[in-house]
Amino acid sequence: MKVIDDFLPTNEFKIIHDCLTSLQFDWHYLNGLVKDDDPKGSFQFVHGFFDPDTSCTCPYFHIFDSTLDKLGAKSLKRVKANLTTAHKEPLYSSFHIDYPNITTAILYLNTNNGYTEFKSGDKVKSVSNRVVVFDSNLKHRTVTCTDQKTRIVINFNY
Image (cartoon, rainbow, N blue to C red; front, side, top):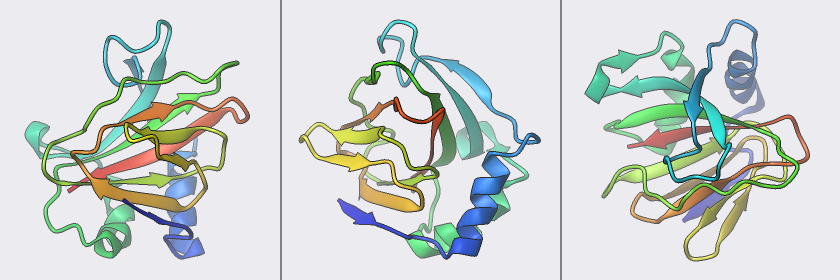
């Protein structure tokens, strides 16, 4: 597992941040954080940028060109953004893997007290422009925030 702060140059990160937080950007409701057995009442909003299994490529996908280059992503499986809302107490998704035997990277768009927790007990705090890169076989989960209105991450599977 590798955590990198200030992953993108400020101007490149701002383009991504401003796109995902604009009024024109579409978010789609998903019942649960990851699976149906997530905490009762949990939900999130998602936006699929790239998924070859569904022939889905979002017109905003180009904003990740330099991000993908910097990650060294040669072959993509999926790029997806997740937005969770604040709760009085943190909600914990189930531990999961996104896809087996590839690499996962999570880019955090805003700083908040939510985090990514790994089955090993390691935690990566949500810090704006931080990325964590890890073997996709490591089980991890989402932990929602309580101190900001939203927690926004972009998940790269490659």
